[in-house]
Length: 632
Image (cartoon, rainbow, N blue to C red; front, side, top):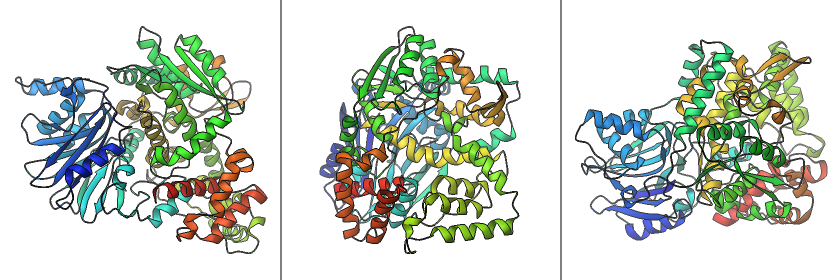
C-alpha cells in the first residue's frame, strides 16, 4: 500500500513542492519514497511506499517502463499479477522482469495491451497515475469499486492529484475554499459523495474509470473500463442456473479463491474478526487455506450493547486462529475524536470510524496486511433497511398516486419543511421522512427518503432515478445504489483511511471481480428469503451464512447483530465530549465564516438537547466544525 501525488507546473519549485506532498503521506508509505520530475514539461510525480510484495528496490516507485516511455506511481495490489505476467511472457518470449513486484507487471501490461485492456485484465485494488513521455498524456485511474482513493483538480491553473486531500492542501496557492454543494451533501449523507470533494475545484475520480489529461492538462476525458450498473444488470439477465446447494458450493469456491489470491504478501498478514457473518466467513476461508493459525484481531467494548468480542473469541477458538482481543474503554474511544480530521483529511461522520481505527492499530502491532469482511451486506442483502423499505414501499404504492401525493404534501408541510417554521422543536424528522416517502414514485426515491430524509433540517431532497431501469427487484435497486454510493464513499473510505493512518493495508476479498459477478447473478431468494423454521422466519444473507456454516456451527452465530458503533447519544449528553461539542456549537467558526447559518446550527443543537432528535445531523455538524478548525 502506498500514497501517490503529482502535478504539472512551471511556476513552482517542483522538487520542494513534491517533497512536501510526499511528507504529508508518510503514514501511507513509511518504508521509502522517491520523486520523478520532467524538467521540460513540469510533470512531477511523488510516491511513498509501504512495501508488501518485492521488498527490494526493484519494486520502488516512481517506476519507468522497460522501453522508457511510461512513468507510473501506483497505490494498491494486483492480486492476479502472476497470471498477467504469464500472459505477457506468452505474448513475448523475450520478456523478463527486473524484480517481482505487481507494480512492474501492471506497468508493462499497460504498455503492451493499452490502458483499458490492461485494467480489464486486473483483479485488485488500486489508484494509478501514468505519465506518457511520448505524448505528454497523464492518465489517472481507480479500481472497480473504489477501494483506493484518488483526488484531482486545478490550483492556479496547475493540474494536481493525490491520494488524500492533505497532500493537495500543501500545494502553493491552494485557498481551501469549501464547496457549498459538498457541504450540503455531507450534512445529508455524513460523507462527501463522489465526484465531489469538500473543496471547490477538487474532485474524486469515479471508480472503474480512467481519465486522460493531454497538455495543457486543462480538462480530462473520462472512459469506463468497468461499469458496475451494467455488470449488475448482466447478472440479473443471466442468472445463476444451478440449484441453491450448487450456488452455495460455487460461492464457497469463488470466495475461497478470492481469499487465496489476497494472501499474496511478503510481510505478516492477518484478518479482522468482529464476530459477525462477514468477517467470520473470510477468516474461516483463510484458515481453511493456510497451514499455520491465522492472526485475527478483535476489539471489545465495556458497554455490552456494542460488544461482540466474546462471540469473536468463540469463533477464533473453534477455527484455531492466533487471536488477539483488546477491550477498549470509553475514554480510549473518546480520545480518538480529536484525531479524526488528521486521520481522514476530509469530513466523514460515520462514528464506526473510531473502532475501525482502533482495530487497525491493534492489527498493525503484529501484521502489515489485514483482510476484512466488508461488502457482505451490500452483496447479499444484509441490511434490515432492504426488506423493511421494500415492504413499506409496496404498501405505499397501493395508495392511489393522487391521494398519496396529497397526504405526503400535508405531512411534510405539517412537520416543518424548513427551520424557519414556527416552533420547529415540536416536530420530528421521522414524520417529515414519512411524508417524503409518500411523495416518492420510485424505489430509488423511496430508498433515499428512508435513509437520508431523517430531518427536515437537511438539504433539499435530491430526486433519484432508477439505476437498473426496471431490471431485477426493488431490493436489487437498493443494493446496487449502496454499492455505487454508500459503500465506496463511506465504508471503503473508513477502511482505507483508518488502516493507512497506522500504515496497515486492508484488503476486501468480497470485492473480488469474480465474487461480484457471481453475487450479481444470484436470485434474490438465495440472499433474502423466508423459511419455515419454527414459524415464518426472514433470513438475510442466507447463502453467505450457509457458506460459513460449512466451517463454523450455526449455533455459535445464532445471536442478534450488534454492529460496530459507539454511544454517540451518551457522549453528546454527558462528559467531556458533551462539553467540547457544546463549545464548538456555541463558538462555531463555520457560522462566523458564513459557511452555516447561525439559526440553523442553534436549531439543530436545541432539537437534540431538548427533544432528543436529529442526533445524526448534530454529529455531522460537530465533525465538520472540528475538521474546519483543523484544515481551514
